[in-house]
Length: 202
Image (cartoon, rainbow, N blue to C red; front, top):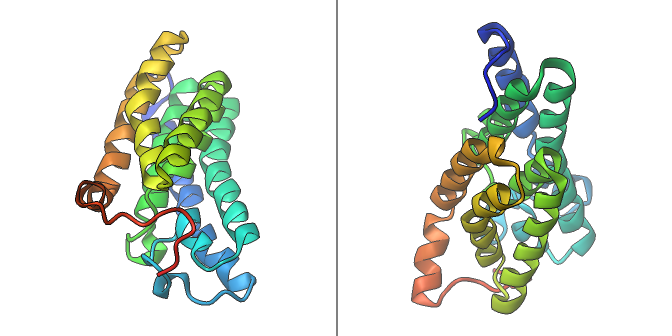
């Protein structure tokens, strides 16, 4: 964690800004804009890119993935530019919480993998690129998006320290805890052999 230098009021301000940015439900917005129906009534009901893909629209899923990643990155980069690294990491954590627990959807949001990736790319882009590779490896071998996300969460802290970005370790650890908590049902299904494959409808 970087040294806390910004005043508490500044950190709280960026926590609010980060949360509001993170809470924008792009999956719902994109699905409605493209005439794909109510995402909450499709597949798992989740608002993330994996569930958007279950509508059969790869462009909608790609747009959701990019936008969900961008909101985490934008929160961090804006705070870093305007208030410093401590505020940037607070804003990033708040953006993740906003994505997973958006007030607009009664705190029932996404699982945070795309937002986590966006934050990692903004925090330390080499680490973010490695994380993207880990997702491709995990998801590609298992054909399960959740496995890729869990692999990122499990390994990103190690990668961060190994590549010399240890000041972001605490943030990464907190994000990892959130990802694993949000994937607890997926973990049960993976163990039971019932986790849906990428692109599988239902």
